[in-house]
Length: 286
Image (cartoon, rainbow, N blue to C red; front, side):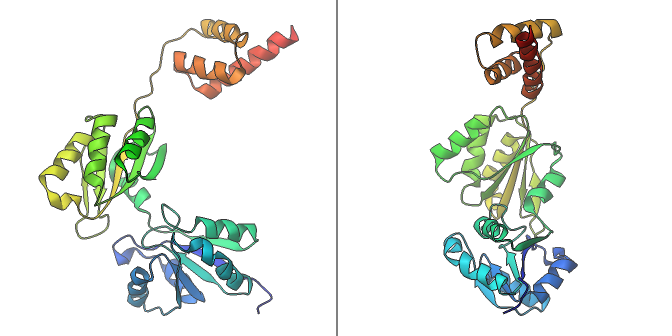
């Protein structure tokens, strides 16, 4: 047993084009003692392509909790391990969360080996705002649950990012059209970095029409990016806002005042909270 614990490397791998593997990822995969893969049948061809031969351990959503302790014990004993998913950056809608969390809790060094992510790749070519976005991952499989999730996002002002599979892409976009609105700006990125890479649509209706008119567009792996709603800014008088805050503070808690006044004026809730806190302190000092 080594006197020094090993390292858990979280290694990003290509999402399609094998040329996207980084030099550092290759070096790490070549140097570790073993590789934990979401699906060894997907990882083995990549390692073969790179000329790397390493012991593979399957680590997926069905066995992750059962295998964590044995894997971490090996790292504590001095072995270095690489964690990879089927494609892209591990833990982004992929297994590995429990492993990494417990590794950190046990004081094991966890080192990221960055690279391709379908999420970032799609955002970079979307033409939609990327300064603030909300990653939703995969929507629920069942229709009612999926629609409920979309309904909860109707008023979100940030860019929304979803992953979707070929089995549900058409149904998901149909629900998006109905709930978020046909004319909501959006793009669909399909098979990024692969032979049939496609980025299409300017709104949800155009995406739906393309899917309905060409069954080939429903094949592959998808990222759907939807623009958030425009934040409404209401003209307001600062003095009137202060008076409203003062009146409401006499009737409800500070957080409730912040929420109500923010909804009424269109001002940021945190700004209202700070203003209300100041008014509250002034009232208490009188």
